[in-house]
Length: 108
Image (cartoon, rainbow, N blue to C red; front, side, top):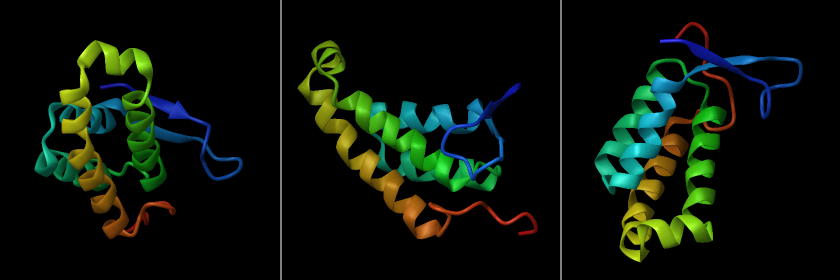
């Protein structure tokens, strides 16, 4: 699948390539309400080489969208409540990985 180059929130002067198939599943499983799936999708994205700061950005985008009025009206309060624990689980997995604020090491 094609990758996109992300310039915002990267280390200065550096473009990072992210594969959408590694970050979009994080948002989908959070919306579905699956805590364990959120953990696995964060682990998978990191293991595929997605930088921790882009996983963190993905989680932040999901959290922001979750709080917008139009999204709340569209999906209802039950879905919003169901997303809370998976969002926390994904964030915890990222924190525990130790890669949330730094780049993934190049050589393992």
